[in-house]
Image: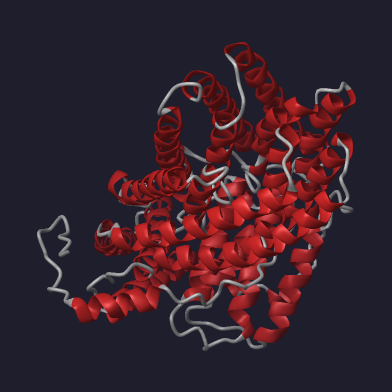
Length: 587
Protein backbone atom coordinates (compact mmCIF):
# COMPACT_ATOMS: atom_id res chain seq x y z
CA UNK A 1 0.00 0.00 0.00
CA UNK A 2 1.29 3.43 -0.92
CA UNK A 3 -0.46 5.98 1.27
CA UNK A 4 -0.60 9.48 -0.11
CA UNK A 5 -0.75 12.63 1.91
CA UNK A 6 -2.98 15.62 1.33
CA UNK A 7 -0.25 17.22 -0.73
CA UNK A 8 -0.33 14.36 -3.21
CA UNK A 9 3.04 12.88 -2.23
CA UNK A 10 3.27 9.13 -2.42
CA UNK A 11 5.52 6.97 -0.29
CA UNK A 12 8.12 4.88 -2.06
CA UNK A 13 7.14 1.38 -3.12
CA UNK A 14 7.36 -1.21 -0.38
CA UNK A 15 8.20 -4.81 -1.13
CA UNK A 16 7.94 -8.12 0.75
CA UNK A 17 11.27 -7.59 2.51
CA UNK A 18 10.10 -4.28 4.00
CA UNK A 19 6.81 -5.91 5.02
CA UNK A 20 8.54 -8.77 6.83
CA UNK A 21 10.89 -6.33 8.58
CA UNK A 22 7.93 -4.21 9.65
CA UNK A 23 6.05 -7.23 11.03
CA UNK A 24 9.08 -8.39 13.03
CA UNK A 25 9.60 -4.89 14.40
CA UNK A 26 6.04 -4.29 15.58
CA UNK A 27 5.64 -7.78 17.06
CA UNK A 28 8.38 -7.12 19.58
CA UNK A 29 6.95 -7.52 23.12
CA UNK A 30 9.51 -5.12 24.65
CA UNK A 31 7.96 -2.98 27.36
CA UNK A 32 5.11 -5.40 28.14
CA UNK A 33 6.17 -5.84 31.77
CA UNK A 34 7.08 -2.21 32.52
CA UNK A 35 5.59 -0.78 35.73
CA UNK A 36 4.45 2.85 35.74
CA UNK A 37 4.25 5.09 38.83
CA UNK A 38 0.73 6.28 39.65
CA UNK A 39 -0.50 8.79 42.24
CA UNK A 40 -3.82 8.38 44.01
CA UNK A 41 -4.33 4.76 42.93
CA UNK A 42 -5.50 3.54 46.37
CA UNK A 43 -8.25 6.13 46.71
CA UNK A 44 -9.43 5.57 43.16
CA UNK A 45 -9.53 1.79 43.60
CA UNK A 46 -11.40 2.10 46.91
CA UNK A 47 -13.99 4.35 45.29
CA UNK A 48 -14.46 1.87 42.42
CA UNK A 49 -14.86 -1.03 44.85
CA UNK A 50 -17.44 0.88 46.90
CA UNK A 51 -19.41 1.74 43.76
CA UNK A 52 -19.64 -1.96 42.99
CA UNK A 53 -20.09 -3.22 46.55
CA UNK A 54 -22.98 -1.08 47.77
CA UNK A 55 -25.66 -2.13 45.24
CA UNK A 56 -24.33 -5.69 44.82
CA UNK A 57 -24.27 -6.50 48.53
CA UNK A 58 -27.73 -4.96 48.97
CA UNK A 59 -29.12 -7.23 46.24
CA UNK A 60 -27.31 -10.23 47.71
CA UNK A 61 -28.85 -9.50 51.12
CA UNK A 62 -32.27 -9.32 49.44
CA UNK A 63 -31.74 -12.74 47.89
CA UNK A 64 -31.50 -11.42 44.29
CA UNK A 65 -27.85 -12.08 43.69
CA UNK A 66 -28.45 -12.93 40.02
CA UNK A 67 -29.39 -9.28 39.43
CA UNK A 68 -26.27 -7.86 41.08
CA UNK A 69 -24.23 -8.18 37.89
CA UNK A 70 -26.30 -5.50 36.14
CA UNK A 71 -25.69 -2.98 38.91
CA UNK A 72 -22.01 -3.92 38.82
CA UNK A 73 -21.87 -3.22 35.09
CA UNK A 74 -23.27 0.26 35.68
CA UNK A 75 -20.75 0.79 38.48
CA UNK A 76 -17.91 0.44 35.96
CA UNK A 77 -18.66 4.11 35.21
CA UNK A 78 -16.27 5.07 37.99
CA UNK A 79 -13.36 3.59 36.02
CA UNK A 80 -13.43 6.52 33.60
CA UNK A 81 -12.15 10.05 34.13
CA UNK A 82 -9.49 9.04 36.63
CA UNK A 83 -7.40 12.22 36.29
CA UNK A 84 -10.01 14.79 35.23
CA UNK A 85 -10.66 17.86 37.41
CA UNK A 86 -14.05 17.62 39.11
CA UNK A 87 -15.92 20.01 36.85
CA UNK A 88 -14.89 18.18 33.69
CA UNK A 89 -15.19 14.82 35.44
CA UNK A 90 -18.84 15.53 36.25
CA UNK A 91 -19.69 16.07 32.58
CA UNK A 92 -17.58 13.18 31.28
CA UNK A 93 -18.89 10.64 33.78
CA UNK A 94 -22.48 11.72 33.18
CA UNK A 95 -22.05 10.85 29.51
CA UNK A 96 -20.28 7.59 30.39
CA UNK A 97 -23.09 6.68 32.80
CA UNK A 98 -25.64 7.20 30.03
CA UNK A 99 -23.53 5.12 27.64
CA UNK A 100 -23.04 2.31 30.15
CA UNK A 101 -26.74 2.23 30.96
CA UNK A 102 -27.60 2.22 27.26
CA UNK A 103 -25.20 -0.68 26.65
CA UNK A 104 -26.82 -2.76 29.38
CA UNK A 105 -30.34 -1.84 28.32
CA UNK A 106 -29.88 -2.50 24.62
CA UNK A 107 -27.89 -5.65 25.34
CA UNK A 108 -30.62 -7.01 27.58
CA UNK A 109 -33.28 -6.13 25.01
CA UNK A 110 -31.28 -7.81 22.25
CA UNK A 111 -30.87 -10.96 24.36
CA UNK A 112 -34.61 -11.10 24.98
CA UNK A 113 -35.42 -10.63 21.27
CA UNK A 114 -32.64 -12.42 19.38
CA UNK A 115 -31.37 -15.36 21.42
CA UNK A 116 -34.65 -17.36 21.37
CA UNK A 117 -34.68 -17.13 17.55
CA UNK A 118 -32.70 -19.12 15.01
CA UNK A 119 -29.56 -17.22 14.08
CA UNK A 120 -29.95 -14.94 17.07
CA UNK A 121 -26.43 -15.62 18.30
CA UNK A 122 -25.02 -14.36 14.99
CA UNK A 123 -27.08 -11.18 15.35
CA UNK A 124 -25.60 -10.65 18.82
CA UNK A 125 -22.05 -11.06 17.43
CA UNK A 126 -22.75 -8.50 14.71
CA UNK A 127 -24.17 -6.08 17.28
CA UNK A 128 -21.09 -6.54 19.47
CA UNK A 129 -18.87 -5.62 16.52
CA UNK A 130 -20.84 -2.40 15.95
CA UNK A 131 -20.66 -1.48 19.64
CA UNK A 132 -16.92 -2.23 19.72
CA UNK A 133 -16.17 0.07 16.77
CA UNK A 134 -18.40 2.87 18.03
CA UNK A 135 -17.01 2.66 21.58
CA UNK A 136 -13.40 2.68 20.36
CA UNK A 137 -14.03 5.68 18.12
CA UNK A 138 -15.85 7.62 20.84
CA UNK A 139 -13.29 6.88 23.58
CA UNK A 140 -10.38 7.85 21.33
CA UNK A 141 -12.12 11.06 20.29
CA UNK A 142 -12.82 11.95 23.93
CA UNK A 143 -9.28 10.89 24.95
CA UNK A 144 -10.60 8.49 27.58
CA UNK A 145 -7.72 6.19 28.44
CA UNK A 146 -7.60 3.06 30.54
CA UNK A 147 -9.88 0.16 29.69
CA UNK A 148 -12.28 2.59 28.01
CA UNK A 149 -14.12 0.99 25.12
CA UNK A 150 -13.50 -2.54 26.43
CA UNK A 151 -15.67 -1.90 29.49
CA UNK A 152 -18.49 -0.48 27.37
CA UNK A 153 -18.29 -3.54 25.13
CA UNK A 154 -18.17 -5.83 28.17
CA UNK A 155 -21.33 -4.25 29.57
CA UNK A 156 -23.16 -4.76 26.28
CA UNK A 157 -21.81 -8.29 25.71
CA UNK A 158 -22.57 -9.52 29.24
CA UNK A 159 -26.16 -8.28 28.97
CA UNK A 160 -26.64 -9.43 25.38
CA UNK A 161 -25.43 -12.96 26.17
CA UNK A 162 -27.42 -13.29 29.38
CA UNK A 163 -30.79 -14.87 29.99
CA UNK A 164 -33.31 -12.07 29.60
CA UNK A 165 -37.01 -11.92 28.87
CA UNK A 166 -38.91 -8.82 27.72
CA UNK A 167 -40.05 -8.30 31.30
CA UNK A 168 -36.43 -8.22 32.49
CA UNK A 169 -35.24 -5.42 30.22
CA UNK A 170 -36.53 -2.52 32.31
CA UNK A 171 -35.28 -3.87 35.69
CA UNK A 172 -31.86 -4.64 34.21
CA UNK A 173 -31.63 -1.14 32.76
CA UNK A 174 -32.77 0.44 36.02
CA UNK A 175 -30.17 -1.47 38.01
CA UNK A 176 -27.43 -0.40 35.61
CA UNK A 177 -28.60 3.21 35.85
CA UNK A 178 -28.60 3.02 39.66
CA UNK A 179 -25.08 1.57 39.68
CA UNK A 180 -23.87 4.25 37.27
CA UNK A 181 -25.49 7.04 39.29
CA UNK A 182 -23.89 5.77 42.50
CA UNK A 183 -20.51 5.56 40.74
CA UNK A 184 -20.91 9.15 39.54
CA UNK A 185 -21.74 10.33 43.06
CA UNK A 186 -18.75 8.55 44.58
CA UNK A 187 -16.43 9.87 41.88
CA UNK A 188 -17.55 13.40 42.73
CA UNK A 189 -17.56 12.97 46.52
CA UNK A 190 -13.89 13.83 46.81
CA UNK A 191 -14.71 17.39 45.78
CA UNK A 192 -16.12 17.97 49.28
CA UNK A 193 -12.84 16.99 50.98
CA UNK A 194 -10.05 17.80 48.50
CA UNK A 195 -11.49 19.96 45.70
CA UNK A 196 -8.08 20.49 44.14
CA UNK A 197 -6.93 16.86 44.34
CA UNK A 198 -6.90 16.17 40.54
CA UNK A 199 -4.98 19.40 39.91
CA UNK A 200 -2.43 18.55 42.59
CA UNK A 201 -1.89 15.09 41.09
CA UNK A 202 -1.48 16.59 37.61
CA UNK A 203 1.19 19.00 38.86
CA UNK A 204 2.91 16.18 40.78
CA UNK A 205 3.02 14.10 37.59
CA UNK A 206 4.57 17.01 35.71
CA UNK A 207 7.24 17.46 38.38
CA UNK A 208 8.11 13.75 38.26
CA UNK A 209 8.35 13.87 34.47
CA UNK A 210 10.77 16.77 34.81
CA UNK A 211 12.77 14.81 37.38
CA UNK A 212 13.11 11.97 34.87
CA UNK A 213 14.42 14.49 32.38
CA UNK A 214 17.22 15.40 34.80
CA UNK A 215 18.04 11.85 35.87
CA UNK A 216 20.38 11.36 32.92
CA UNK A 217 20.87 14.72 31.17
CA UNK A 218 22.22 14.38 27.67
CA UNK A 219 21.18 10.71 27.41
CA UNK A 220 17.74 11.40 25.94
CA UNK A 221 18.90 11.25 22.34
CA UNK A 222 15.48 10.54 20.82
CA UNK A 223 13.69 13.20 22.88
CA UNK A 224 11.22 10.80 24.49
CA UNK A 225 11.78 12.05 28.04
CA UNK A 226 11.45 15.64 26.89
CA UNK A 227 8.23 14.76 25.08
CA UNK A 228 6.77 13.06 28.17
CA UNK A 229 7.74 16.05 30.28
CA UNK A 230 6.24 18.53 27.81
CA UNK A 231 2.98 16.58 27.60
CA UNK A 232 2.76 16.27 31.41
CA UNK A 233 3.42 19.98 31.93
CA UNK A 234 0.76 20.89 29.38
CA UNK A 235 -1.73 18.59 31.13
CA UNK A 236 -0.94 20.31 34.43
CA UNK A 237 -1.63 23.72 32.88
CA UNK A 238 -4.86 22.39 31.39
CA UNK A 239 -5.96 20.92 34.74
CA UNK A 240 -5.47 24.30 36.44
CA UNK A 241 -6.91 26.35 33.59
CA UNK A 242 -3.61 28.14 33.09
CA UNK A 243 -1.64 28.83 29.95
CA UNK A 244 1.92 27.60 29.40
CA UNK A 245 3.99 30.69 30.02
CA UNK A 246 5.90 31.95 33.03
CA UNK A 247 5.15 35.65 32.56
CA UNK A 248 2.50 37.45 34.58
CA UNK A 249 2.80 37.51 38.34
CA UNK A 250 -0.97 37.81 38.66
CA UNK A 251 -1.22 34.20 37.52
CA UNK A 252 0.71 32.81 40.48
CA UNK A 253 -2.26 32.20 42.75
CA UNK A 254 -1.61 29.35 45.18
CA UNK A 255 1.11 26.73 45.33
CA UNK A 256 -0.15 24.63 42.42
CA UNK A 257 -0.26 27.61 40.10
CA UNK A 258 3.24 28.71 41.04
CA UNK A 259 4.62 25.19 40.67
CA UNK A 260 2.95 24.82 37.28
CA UNK A 261 4.59 27.95 35.97
CA UNK A 262 7.85 26.81 37.57
CA UNK A 263 7.58 23.49 35.74
CA UNK A 264 7.17 25.36 32.46
CA UNK A 265 10.21 27.53 33.20
CA UNK A 266 12.30 24.46 34.04
CA UNK A 267 11.15 22.64 30.92
CA UNK A 268 11.80 25.32 28.33
CA UNK A 269 14.91 26.64 30.06
CA UNK A 270 16.48 23.18 29.94
CA UNK A 271 16.78 23.34 26.15
CA UNK A 272 19.82 25.62 26.41
CA UNK A 273 20.47 26.20 30.13
CA UNK A 274 20.71 22.92 32.06
CA UNK A 275 20.90 23.22 35.86
CA UNK A 276 24.21 23.12 37.66
CA UNK A 277 23.25 20.01 39.66
CA UNK A 278 20.62 17.98 37.73
CA UNK A 279 20.57 15.11 40.26
CA UNK A 280 19.85 17.46 43.16
CA UNK A 281 17.11 19.19 41.20
CA UNK A 282 15.52 15.82 40.35
CA UNK A 283 15.47 14.87 44.05
CA UNK A 284 13.86 18.18 44.98
CA UNK A 285 11.22 17.84 42.27
CA UNK A 286 10.29 14.35 43.48
CA UNK A 287 10.12 15.57 47.08
CA UNK A 288 7.78 18.35 46.02
CA UNK A 289 5.68 15.87 44.02
CA UNK A 290 5.29 13.61 47.07
CA UNK A 291 4.11 16.57 49.12
CA UNK A 292 1.52 17.46 46.49
CA UNK A 293 0.21 13.88 46.37
CA UNK A 294 -0.05 13.61 50.16
CA UNK A 295 -3.75 13.59 51.09
CA UNK A 296 -2.94 14.56 54.69
CA UNK A 297 -1.94 18.07 53.61
CA UNK A 298 -4.95 20.28 52.99
CA UNK A 299 -2.67 22.99 51.61
CA UNK A 300 0.45 21.66 49.87
CA UNK A 301 3.72 23.31 50.96
CA UNK A 302 6.15 24.94 48.57
CA UNK A 303 9.26 22.87 49.28
CA UNK A 304 11.44 23.89 46.35
CA UNK A 305 13.85 26.58 47.60
CA UNK A 306 14.06 29.77 45.51
CA UNK A 307 17.65 29.10 44.50
CA UNK A 308 16.46 26.10 42.45
CA UNK A 309 14.15 28.26 40.37
CA UNK A 310 15.31 29.45 36.93
CA UNK A 311 16.18 33.13 36.65
CA UNK A 312 12.98 33.99 34.78
CA UNK A 313 10.80 32.23 37.34
CA UNK A 314 12.63 33.91 40.26
CA UNK A 315 12.12 37.32 38.72
CA UNK A 316 8.45 36.59 38.17
CA UNK A 317 8.07 35.37 41.73
CA UNK A 318 9.76 38.43 43.18
CA UNK A 319 7.58 40.75 41.12
CA UNK A 320 4.33 39.25 42.36
CA UNK A 321 2.40 39.35 45.61
CA UNK A 322 1.62 35.91 47.02
CA UNK A 323 -2.04 35.09 47.11
CA UNK A 324 -3.72 33.44 50.09
CA UNK A 325 -3.53 29.63 50.14
CA UNK A 326 -6.14 27.91 48.00
CA UNK A 327 -6.93 30.99 45.91
CA UNK A 328 -7.83 30.15 42.35
CA UNK A 329 -6.30 31.52 39.16
CA UNK A 330 -7.37 34.84 37.71
CA UNK A 331 -9.93 34.29 34.92
CA UNK A 332 -8.08 34.36 31.58
CA UNK A 333 -8.68 36.91 28.88
CA UNK A 334 -10.53 35.97 25.64
CA UNK A 335 -7.26 35.42 23.75
CA UNK A 336 -6.08 33.16 26.54
CA UNK A 337 -9.34 31.20 26.46
CA UNK A 338 -8.83 30.49 22.75
CA UNK A 339 -5.29 29.35 23.48
CA UNK A 340 -6.48 27.19 26.39
CA UNK A 341 -8.73 25.29 23.98
CA UNK A 342 -5.61 24.33 22.05
CA UNK A 343 -3.93 23.07 25.19
CA UNK A 344 -7.05 21.01 25.93
CA UNK A 345 -6.43 19.09 22.74
CA UNK A 346 -9.09 20.60 20.48
CA UNK A 347 -6.80 21.50 17.63
CA UNK A 348 -7.10 20.81 13.89
CA UNK A 349 -5.11 17.95 12.44
CA UNK A 350 -4.57 16.30 15.81
CA UNK A 351 -5.39 12.79 16.92
CA UNK A 352 -9.07 13.70 16.98
CA UNK A 353 -9.11 13.90 13.19
CA UNK A 354 -11.78 11.59 11.79
CA UNK A 355 -9.59 9.67 9.37
CA UNK A 356 -6.97 8.98 12.07
CA UNK A 357 -9.54 7.48 14.45
CA UNK A 358 -11.41 5.46 11.85
CA UNK A 359 -8.87 2.67 11.19
CA UNK A 360 -8.35 1.67 14.87
CA UNK A 361 -12.13 1.56 15.31
CA UNK A 362 -12.46 -0.55 12.15
CA UNK A 363 -9.76 -2.93 13.39
CA UNK A 364 -11.54 -3.41 16.69
CA UNK A 365 -14.95 -3.94 15.08
CA UNK A 366 -13.56 -6.45 12.57
CA UNK A 367 -11.63 -8.40 15.20
CA UNK A 368 -14.70 -8.54 17.43
CA UNK A 369 -16.84 -9.86 14.58
CA UNK A 370 -14.29 -12.43 13.38
CA UNK A 371 -13.42 -13.73 16.87
CA UNK A 372 -17.05 -13.91 17.92
CA UNK A 373 -18.06 -15.58 14.67
CA UNK A 374 -15.22 -18.11 14.89
CA UNK A 375 -16.12 -18.97 18.49
CA UNK A 376 -19.73 -19.43 17.41
CA UNK A 377 -18.74 -21.68 14.50
CA UNK A 378 -16.46 -23.75 16.74
CA UNK A 379 -19.20 -24.13 19.33
CA UNK A 380 -17.18 -22.62 22.18
CA UNK A 381 -19.06 -21.95 25.37
CA UNK A 382 -19.21 -18.25 26.23
CA UNK A 383 -17.93 -17.45 22.74
CA UNK A 384 -18.30 -13.72 23.37
CA UNK A 385 -15.19 -13.94 25.55
CA UNK A 386 -13.16 -14.46 22.37
CA UNK A 387 -14.65 -11.29 20.91
CA UNK A 388 -13.88 -9.35 24.11
CA UNK A 389 -10.30 -10.60 24.13
CA UNK A 390 -9.74 -9.57 20.50
CA UNK A 391 -11.19 -6.13 21.26
CA UNK A 392 -8.98 -5.76 24.35
CA UNK A 393 -5.86 -6.58 22.34
CA UNK A 394 -6.72 -3.90 19.77
CA UNK A 395 -7.73 -1.28 22.32
CA UNK A 396 -4.28 0.18 21.79
CA UNK A 397 -2.37 2.86 19.90
CA UNK A 398 -0.83 0.72 17.16
CA UNK A 399 0.24 -2.82 16.29
CA UNK A 400 3.29 -2.64 18.57
CA UNK A 401 1.17 -1.78 21.61
CA UNK A 402 -1.35 -4.42 20.51
CA UNK A 403 1.48 -6.96 20.67
CA UNK A 404 2.31 -5.80 24.18
CA UNK A 405 -1.37 -6.14 25.09
CA UNK A 406 -1.38 -9.68 23.67
CA UNK A 407 1.60 -10.69 25.83
CA UNK A 408 0.08 -9.04 28.89
CA UNK A 409 -3.27 -10.65 28.18
CA UNK A 410 -1.74 -14.11 27.85
CA UNK A 411 0.26 -13.96 31.07
CA UNK A 412 -2.47 -12.19 33.03
CA UNK A 413 -5.19 -14.61 31.89
CA UNK A 414 -3.10 -17.63 32.86
CA UNK A 415 -2.56 -16.25 36.37
CA UNK A 416 -6.20 -15.17 36.62
CA UNK A 417 -7.49 -18.65 35.77
CA UNK A 418 -5.50 -20.05 38.69
CA UNK A 419 -7.33 -17.59 40.97
CA UNK A 420 -10.68 -18.71 39.54
CA UNK A 421 -9.92 -22.36 40.22
CA UNK A 422 -8.85 -21.53 43.78
CA UNK A 423 -11.98 -19.49 44.52
CA UNK A 424 -14.49 -21.92 43.02
CA UNK A 425 -12.79 -24.87 44.71
CA UNK A 426 -13.99 -23.39 48.02
CA UNK A 427 -17.62 -23.42 46.77
CA UNK A 428 -18.45 -19.93 48.10
CA UNK A 429 -22.03 -18.84 48.60
CA UNK A 430 -23.56 -15.94 46.59
CA UNK A 431 -22.79 -13.34 49.24
CA UNK A 432 -19.17 -14.43 49.57
CA UNK A 433 -18.85 -14.51 45.79
CA UNK A 434 -20.02 -10.89 45.60
CA UNK A 435 -17.46 -9.92 48.23
CA UNK A 436 -14.69 -11.67 46.26
CA UNK A 437 -15.75 -9.83 43.09
CA UNK A 438 -15.60 -6.50 44.92
CA UNK A 439 -12.11 -7.31 46.22
CA UNK A 440 -11.00 -8.21 42.69
CA UNK A 441 -12.41 -4.92 41.41
CA UNK A 442 -10.34 -3.04 43.98
CA UNK A 443 -7.17 -4.92 43.05
CA UNK A 444 -7.77 -4.48 39.32
CA UNK A 445 -8.29 -0.73 39.58
CA UNK A 446 -5.27 -0.42 41.86
CA UNK A 447 -2.79 -2.13 39.52
CA UNK A 448 -4.10 -1.67 35.96
CA UNK A 449 -2.67 1.87 35.61
CA UNK A 450 0.74 0.50 36.55
CA UNK A 451 0.65 -2.38 34.08
CA UNK A 452 -2.23 -3.73 32.01
CA UNK A 453 -1.00 -7.31 32.43
CA UNK A 454 -1.24 -7.07 36.21
CA UNK A 455 -4.75 -5.74 35.81
CA UNK A 456 -5.73 -8.75 33.67
CA UNK A 457 -4.64 -11.04 36.52
CA UNK A 458 -7.64 -9.71 38.47
CA UNK A 459 -9.88 -8.79 35.53
CA UNK A 460 -10.03 -12.43 34.35
CA UNK A 461 -11.46 -13.86 37.60
CA UNK A 462 -13.65 -10.77 37.97
CA UNK A 463 -15.35 -11.46 34.62
CA UNK A 464 -15.63 -15.21 35.16
CA UNK A 465 -17.05 -14.92 38.67
CA UNK A 466 -19.60 -12.36 37.47
CA UNK A 467 -20.65 -14.95 34.88
CA UNK A 468 -20.82 -17.64 37.56
CA UNK A 469 -22.92 -15.32 39.69
CA UNK A 470 -25.71 -15.26 37.11
CA UNK A 471 -25.36 -18.80 35.70
CA UNK A 472 -23.30 -21.13 37.93
CA UNK A 473 -21.17 -23.71 36.12
CA UNK A 474 -18.38 -26.10 36.99
CA UNK A 475 -14.97 -24.53 37.46
CA UNK A 476 -13.42 -26.75 34.80
CA UNK A 477 -15.93 -25.66 32.16
CA UNK A 478 -15.48 -21.97 32.92
CA UNK A 479 -11.68 -22.16 32.87
CA UNK A 480 -11.54 -24.25 29.68
CA UNK A 481 -13.94 -21.92 27.86
CA UNK A 482 -11.97 -18.85 28.94
CA UNK A 483 -8.60 -20.34 27.98
CA UNK A 484 -9.74 -21.36 24.49
CA UNK A 485 -11.57 -18.06 23.94
CA UNK A 486 -8.51 -16.07 25.02
CA UNK A 487 -6.19 -17.90 22.62
CA UNK A 488 -8.65 -17.42 19.76
CA UNK A 489 -9.20 -13.74 20.58
CA UNK A 490 -5.49 -12.94 20.88
CA UNK A 491 -4.67 -14.59 17.53
CA UNK A 492 -7.55 -12.89 15.74
CA UNK A 493 -6.72 -9.52 17.28
CA UNK A 494 -3.10 -9.61 16.17
CA UNK A 495 -4.00 -10.79 12.66
CA UNK A 496 -6.54 -7.98 12.24
CA UNK A 497 -3.97 -5.48 13.48
CA UNK A 498 -1.46 -6.67 10.88
CA UNK A 499 -3.87 -7.05 7.95
CA UNK A 500 -5.85 -3.81 8.38
CA UNK A 501 -3.10 -1.34 7.46
CA UNK A 502 -3.31 2.02 9.19
CA UNK A 503 -2.05 4.16 6.32
CA UNK A 504 -3.55 7.29 7.89
CA UNK A 505 -0.92 7.09 10.63
CA UNK A 506 1.66 8.11 8.03
CA UNK A 507 -0.52 10.99 6.89
CA UNK A 508 -0.88 12.07 10.51
CA UNK A 509 2.90 12.43 10.81
CA UNK A 510 3.05 14.54 7.65
CA UNK A 511 0.25 16.77 8.90
CA UNK A 512 1.83 17.07 12.34
CA UNK A 513 5.16 18.08 10.84
CA UNK A 514 3.46 20.68 8.64
CA UNK A 515 1.46 21.98 11.62
CA UNK A 516 4.59 22.23 13.79
CA UNK A 517 6.44 24.11 11.03
CA UNK A 518 3.52 26.50 10.58
CA UNK A 519 3.21 27.05 14.35
CA UNK A 520 6.94 27.80 14.57
CA UNK A 521 6.66 30.34 11.75
CA UNK A 522 3.68 31.94 13.47
CA UNK A 523 5.61 32.12 16.74
CA UNK A 524 8.60 33.73 15.04
CA UNK A 525 6.38 36.38 13.46
CA UNK A 526 4.81 37.18 16.82
CA UNK A 527 8.18 37.41 18.55
CA UNK A 528 9.92 39.39 15.83
CA UNK A 529 6.97 41.72 15.44
CA UNK A 530 6.82 42.44 19.16
CA UNK A 531 3.08 41.68 19.43
CA UNK A 532 2.46 40.54 23.04
CA UNK A 533 -1.27 40.16 22.36
CA UNK A 534 -0.46 37.32 19.96
CA UNK A 535 1.87 35.52 22.37
CA UNK A 536 -0.70 33.32 24.20
CA UNK A 537 -2.22 31.89 21.03
CA UNK A 538 1.12 31.48 19.22
CA UNK A 539 2.80 29.83 22.20
CA UNK A 540 -0.12 27.48 22.86
CA UNK A 541 -0.23 26.41 19.21
CA UNK A 542 3.49 25.76 19.22
CA UNK A 543 3.45 23.76 22.47
CA UNK A 544 0.54 21.60 21.31
CA UNK A 545 2.08 21.12 17.86
CA UNK A 546 5.40 19.83 19.20
CA UNK A 547 3.62 17.33 21.47
CA UNK A 548 1.41 16.14 18.61
CA UNK A 549 4.43 15.74 16.34
CA UNK A 550 6.11 13.34 18.76
CA UNK A 551 2.88 11.42 19.45
CA UNK A 552 2.14 11.08 15.74
CA UNK A 553 5.64 9.81 15.02
CA UNK A 554 5.53 7.33 17.91
CA UNK A 555 2.12 6.03 16.80
CA UNK A 556 3.25 5.59 13.20
CA UNK A 557 6.49 3.90 14.29
CA UNK A 558 4.43 1.09 15.83
CA UNK A 559 2.72 0.23 12.54
CA UNK A 560 3.98 -2.20 9.89
CA UNK A 561 4.55 0.62 7.38
CA UNK A 562 6.64 3.43 8.84
CA UNK A 563 6.42 7.07 7.81
CA UNK A 564 8.85 7.94 5.01
CA UNK A 565 10.09 11.09 6.75
CA UNK A 566 13.70 11.82 7.63
CA UNK A 567 14.09 11.53 11.43
CA UNK A 568 16.54 14.42 11.31
CA UNK A 569 13.77 16.62 9.90
CA UNK A 570 11.49 15.70 12.79
CA UNK A 571 14.24 16.32 15.35
CA UNK A 572 15.05 19.68 13.80
CA UNK A 573 11.40 20.73 13.98
CA UNK A 574 11.23 19.73 17.66
CA UNK A 575 14.44 21.57 18.52
CA UNK A 576 13.25 24.70 16.74
CA UNK A 577 9.97 24.60 18.64
CA UNK A 578 11.64 24.26 22.05
CA UNK A 579 14.02 27.12 21.33
CA UNK A 580 11.12 29.37 20.31
CA UNK A 581 9.23 28.45 23.48
CA UNK A 582 12.28 29.56 25.46
CA UNK A 583 12.23 32.89 23.63
CA UNK A 584 8.60 33.35 24.70
CA UNK A 585 9.59 32.81 28.33
CA UNK A 586 12.33 35.43 28.10
CA UNK A 587 9.90 37.93 26.58
